[in-house]
Length: 63
Image 1: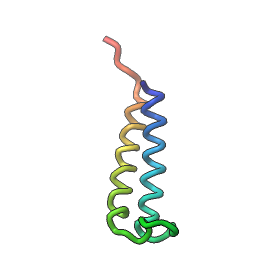
Image 2 (image 1 turned 60 degrees about the horizontal axis):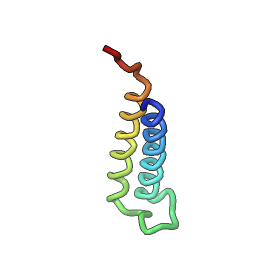
Image 3 (image 1 turned 60 degrees about the vertical axis):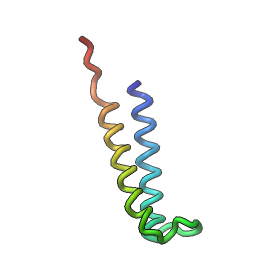
């Protein structure tokens, strides 16, 4: 499960970064470029990814 969280988290961080850069107009060439919606959604998705990465790195508690 930890491996899945790490991989999914990393993918979400990268996806969020791309969406943010498209939203602020740094990456052009798509309908998302220059749209403020993606400038907001991108960091939110990236933050979810960071949470998954941190959760995946924590040792599992076995009771």
